[in-house]
Image (tube, rainbow, N blue to C red):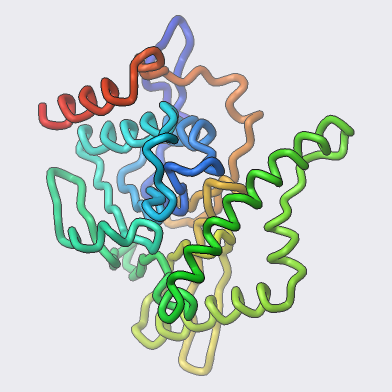
Length: 288
């Protein structure tokens, strides 16, 4: 770990990471774990950041729900851009409105629909993954309805987890249980992985890096034409995971609140400000 700043007499420790992949944050929804994400973001010092889709949830966005912690996540992203860190925003289905801005860039920030990077002599293919979703292609209204249902499930899950913790039984994830036990869900995930890796192998990509299905994963997949490494960054709604690439190695990072008990991370001085004031401050700092 590297010691970077001293705040109120305590060291703010940050890990160096060559590249971090964050996806499916769903800012603007009740299920978004923005506080936990912010702690993670402020605990690392990345060289390159890939925001791999569904960072904003435009489908379910409401002007009546935009907590300060969500704006803090946006400001942390802008802070990275200010420091010259490459930030690639890859569009997803919940933020598909941003696809019309594909190719836009300012400073070290860019908006893309897909991205290919060379990592230590190997090719990595990044995109959100909704292009492989049949529901998205043919019944978008059904996919949006499913998104609303998922948000309601997260609400219900929060209450059930609260009761479970009070009973000393730990947290419960309803959607994880559904994905792991319902045969159609398991088949969908397997098909998603197969289609992505078949295309990656055909195009000779060493890594294919996706989000979309909220299922963190890292594994090597082979077929008759070759092999590739399939990576999925998971989400920041229930799994609270990211992908990290450092010194030639990939790993799945999983948030654990115990990791942050002994680390004081520098706070942003916007706690008492309104969202409008935060937004204006962010724009002012960005343009300066």
